[in-house]
Figure 1: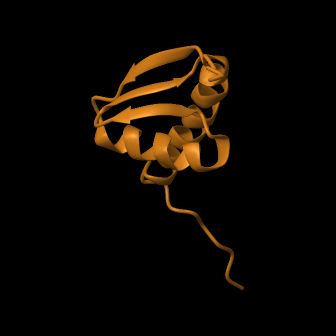
Figure 2: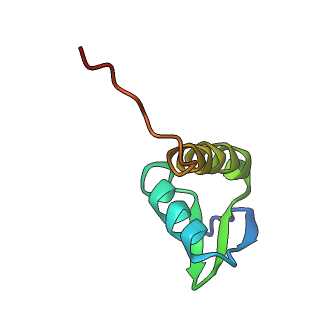
Length: 76
């Protein structure tokens, strides 16, 4: 007897290669990608919200790092 396992997926179209790379990086620790077909991804539907949160964290960190505000250090 063959057992079939069904996993509900959500289609994500990555029009930006950078976002696709970040999602691939996140997948290494979160294991949410079911299918990867170039810039189209099918991800586990029950993890979409967690993926959004993690993606936003990384994007915000990148925005802060590239905002042009240099970090200052105190030199005595």
